Structures are given as C-alpha cells and as structure tokens.
Amino acid sequence: MLRIAVPNKGSLSGPAADMLHEAGYRQRRESKELRIVDPGNEVEFFYLRPRDIAIYVSSGRLDIGITGRDLLVDSGADAEEILPLGFARSTFRFAGKPGTASGVEDLKGRTVATSYEGIVARHLADSGVDASVVHLDGAVETAIELGVAEVIADVVETGTSLRNAGLEVFGEPIMKSEAIVIRRTGADGEEPKVQQFLRRLQGVLVARTYVMMDYDCRVEQLEKAVALTPGLESPTVSPLHNEGWVAVRAMVPAKEAQRIMDDLYAIGARAILTTAIHACRL
Image (cartoon, rainbow, N blue to C red; front, side, top):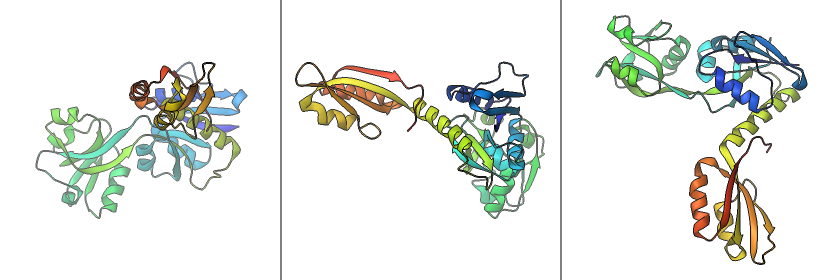
C-alpha cells in the first residue's frame, strides 16, 4: 500500500485535498482525522504539519508527500521534488527600510530575520555572503522596527504588509515556490504505484489547463481552423451530413478559449462549444 503525506492545515491543505479528490482518491471528512485508508486505490494518507512532511518522507517511513518547495528546501531533508502541482505559488524575497540594500551582496556583516532559516542560509552561502540569520516564527516585519535585524526575508505576495511596515523588497527573488510532490532522494522512481499516482495528478493538471472545443466549419476553411486548434497531437475531424461541412474536436488551452472561439467564428466556423475536462491520460 502506498503511504502518502498530505498537509493537514494551511494554504497547502485545501488545494491538495481538492486535487487528490479530483484524481479519484478518498479524502478525510473531518480535520481531526490524521490518517485514512483508501483500500480501493491501495493508498494510505497521513495528514501532517506541512513543515514536517519532508522529514517524514526522507526517513523512508512514507513513500511520497505533498508540501511546498520552500518547506522542502528549508528543511534540508534528504528528499527531492518529482512533480510541481501549480498551486500555492509564492515568491521569497529580501526586504528592508528604503535604501538599506540593493542586492544580496550588500548584506555582508548584517543580520537577516526570517522564518525560513534554511532557505536564507543556503542562499547567502551560494552567493558568497557572510551574514547572520535570526530565526523567528510568524510575522517578521516587526524585527527591523524592534532592532532584532536590519533585513528580513519572507514570502511576498502583494507586498502590502511590507509597505504598511515601511519596508520595500530589494534584489532578485531568493526563490519561487509552489506545491510539489516529493520522494526520498534516490528512491525507486519507476515504482508502479508511485507512477500511477503521478499520472493521476498529471491528468488533473492537464484537465484544469485545457478545455475540449467542438465546432463545425466548411471544408475549404478547415486548414485555417486546424491552425487555430491543433490539439495535442491532431484534432479529430468528422464529415457532417450536409456536404461540404465537417465537425472538429480538439483540446485547447482554457485561458485562450474565448480568443480562439472569436477567431474561429471570424473564419466561418459555427456551433462552437467548449466543455470542461474532468480527467485525462496523455
């Protein structure tokens, strides 16, 4: 039975559970449940603190886990990323009072406060900068005001909380994070149950990214239409009862669907429909 770690709370928890549900896996009904078994899929889920997941997976006690890239790097655990999941995206950056620094090279001899000591220490070392790192839990914006540090390093989304604290980001991003699937470094990547799990999640990612588009067009406009909707390999084209017309079906990127529909209509295509894709295998 495949043993999988899933975040039990925070920004990773809900989207991870939703994705697993879309992939056909049973999920817990109450937040107090720490372990459930899905016998039909031969999977056992363990709901753990997101920060601990990489440690459990690296120990070999659990086969794979879902966590954040930032949490994996910060943990220093002997685990590796095998699939990005496209949600819980964030950017990790330095910030300070205006004029404090323009880049990581200006941090030599300074003190940086962060909740992600592992990430910051690694980034400073990779950049050849000798600076002190102070670990704080929770909001770190007040560290500068209280004199604990001269610079902070934290997740930046809109930057509103930093501006409210009189701070500004500087330099290049330390890292960009998102939810990922991890496994123990060096584990068998071809294990059938793991590959099946990854295929299911990849199917969900594709289903969320594409829609199925159907439309009718005249034969003389088919090449122009197919150029607009090439599909993944090639669109399906079927003759209609009315001579000179064909029906076309192809997968198209969801974010471009409205524009493609406009372009198809402009060249004479009609009965243009889009439908959601709930699951797929490519």
